[in-house]
Amino acid sequence: MSDSPLEARLSYHLALTFSEREALRWLERRERSYRAGEIILSEGQSTDTLFIVSSGWLHGSVKLPSGDRQIQRFYFVGDITTTLSLAWGYSAATLQAVSDVTLFEVPKNVFGRLFRSHPRLGALLFAVVTAEQVAMADRLTSMGRTDGVARIATLLLDIRSRLRVVDDLRGSSFELPLTQQDLGDAVGLTKTHVNRSLKALEATGLVERDGRLIRITHVEKLAELVNFTDRHGAIATDWLPPTGTPEPTDTAKQ
Image 1 (cartoon, rainbow, N blue to C red):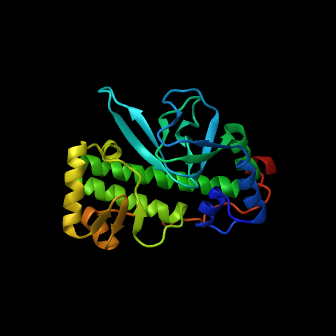
Image 2: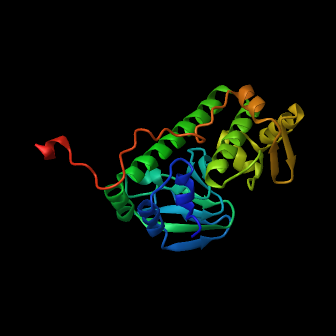
Image 3: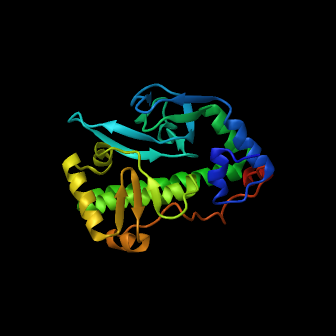
């Protein structure tokens, strides 16, 4: 059997048991496709569903008081979207397809049962989401403390890092199906500033562009230049609970 998207992603960090792999596949039963540009969920919309990305790219954004939008993060194959909405009954962001996408719909209660029946998977998912939040904080720090070149470079490095995990990206070249408006909305720049920043990056020789194809010629040098830390490539798993039936708490043992 070929890996499911979420299974493939989590297997990057940990060898999963047959039971764990079957549990993840069980989540991926309700599939739905969307066209590029289509809105899956609007900010504030009532929802009790999570989505696992089977194919394509999406982004989550919020509307600013000025009427502009701030893209908070991008979603790729194997990502679970709308996790930031778990604490409420509505979506915390607008989820929109960047390219044609296929999603698995997972009700929150079904997702919750995974934590009870497979605590090691639940802990691993928690670790992955934590790493993503730290990466988002890094990008926000970059937006507040650096120039346009560093912001764009940080975003490109982060996308490459995530694609290596979720889409089995090899090497340092990848297709970027984002407009300059998308890039600007993700890093707080105008389209004109994004264009200048991309040209400045190319002038360093560390980034090359050919249409939608991006190639980072020297990842380590670019990362050092913009003080980028890869938050996705390695996640500690030595603390995860064992597989099998959850152990009773100390109180239950007494």
